[in-house]
Image 1: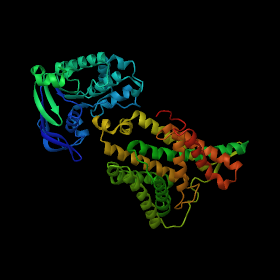
Image 2 (image 1 turned 45 degrees about the horizontal axis):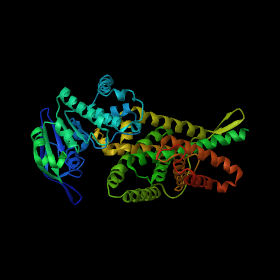
Image 3 (image 1 turned 120 degrees about the vertical axis):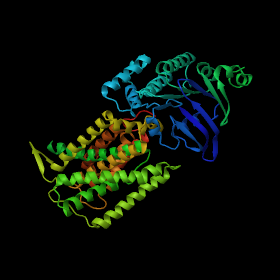
Image 4 (image 1 turned 90 degrees about the vertical axis):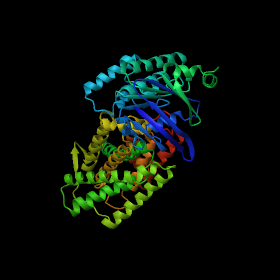
Length: 236
Length: 288
């Protein structure tokens, strides 16, 4: 479904990704792990057209999407929930969710249905419909970011560091929800995480990035047992 | 007593003009992070286009002339967004864009001088006259200014709150990357914002035609005072801009009763300095 073919990405003169290829399809969960600065977010942003690849190509459902504008890639129903949530702090929770559906034409009844759907998954948000999004806690903001991402009925969901800055209990909830979304909607999910253990334990496959290079990939369970990964990413 | 009421109405009317100026540059600031230093020239351009071309040369009735000016200035705003604001705001520092807008202002002034000539002129009969309510006499142009400005500020608020495009504009001003991830075409959105701003400038220009002569310096002072009122109200904050504008207009008119009226223009800037010293965040902006 999504194919990244050997992309090189630069920030100015500094190369951030070296010949990286990944593939996502079916209804699997794929995790991309790596330390800070490994290029995980760069990879996501390049898929979304925020960064441009100097070499290589990105295909989605057989169509080349590298080089086209972000707002057009969004219309292909690829949803990226960025690192640090990037909600609209001065807009209300409901307005944030409505903006999630901006790229899709919806009647107001359909819009309401979609809102209700999110409030069912995240009852906490329902209590805060009229509250300014920026005044909520980190966990609630992350929920809002995910709920906003689900508004346009994504066909591919990519989450960047969904656990960042959250209390351990909430991290567990968050990953449960991600697994549930993947099961209920039967859509592929990509998770980018520094929290390698969590991400690998819920995903089918894993890619490991190190300073811009894809160093290994494979079945998450198998990888979790290799000494290399254990030592470098799982703390033992 | 009636003198006080008359002065108050005049003050509020001028205040609304300053408020509109503040709104007009605030929406561009919010959308692009740039100050449009040519904003007073947009006002000038709108006034000349309306008075010089559509009314005097083409002889159109005022209502049609207003519509034509609005449409022309909207297109002018869109074009300047694609030529100046969008490309220059992508560069590494905002300095290029700032200089771009300053130069745009120079270009407009010189173009105005070339097209309509350096001599001032006025529109006889346009929004002239006065109403008498009891013993209070208010000039027609001031009443129109208050009505039109209220209409614009209210409809802008509704536009930002309830329309899809308006909400998208708020998203763009909060977070451009996130807005594009929602599927908002940021460049077109910014162009629309600049277009709307240019329309407001044109309306300001038209509204002040009966108060000032149509001449090359007509908008410099209201441009500066509008800027001051935006700062006093709370920079980047629309309700603050309105409040700051009206405060400035009223202070100015009552101040001129106490001090010689030649120093009237100083008052706004004294007020600005006081606010910068005591409450730099402005009247309505407490955050940050």
